[in-house]
Image (cartoon, rainbow, N blue to C red):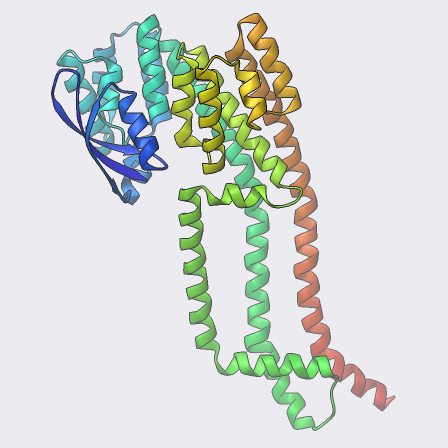
Length: 394
């Protein structure tokens, strides 16, 4: 969800920002983390264009900027070079805004924070941390690697669902064709024969006649159901409800939880490696997790602020696993907490990838068998009267 915020900067200038956050509290924390004093905060619906970042690819921008910086160009020269090659209005607008602010004397972190619809709080945080160490290139590499790994996990999940979805749609269309066209034809033939039919065949033919007489209404109802399903899917995706639902499914819930924890470890580890304090890093994570995990994260952040170690706070609020807990304790003893969090994420990413592959190999044949069985039952019930007639003739 987007929030329109009017805030006062440290130099007493009024700024209007668009902040993406799960709720008003997260938006308020995100704005206050930028050293701004909030004047007003109002929620607004995110437009479709802003939801897709207006055609601006943050990963591609980071990759190209990193290449130019490593080639020896200054920041302004690199941004001007990117501006010259851009042809899309959205990307050109972003570049022009960055260049204008940097020429006015602003830092890159301030320039990107002025465009929150294109640069998320996580990106702003790592850039601001990189400015303290004068190592922007390393920060960009971390973000590119982070986003690439998230995209890989997301693509594996999407790939595992594409074939079952296509199979389900094709099977549904075949079943709909049989029930609205083929079954009514058979029903007319059997009605003229005047023979008694098995009960299940009569029931199937009755339903076929009903659907055949109201085919248009069936298609309209199907279109309404599909549109409603798409709307419900998008709404639940924005609000993070699918993750909460997945956690309640036996056998899948634990895997969904581990996937979310691996993303949490990866993000937190990247922020800590970038030099961001742990409390600030955990506050920046709140907008990227589900509501249940966000509540636990806030409780853990409060414990850490009171002096408890990260491993103990995560264990108390169910934000860890046995292996991750051991790695966190090792990281606390060795002073490499960020590296251990990233290693924990790597471990569970590999495990989750193998589980997704095994699950898809089992689920796809099972779904195919179920759809084939349903269509086979329809065909058998259609031909049962013919089988009875053949038996009587013999």
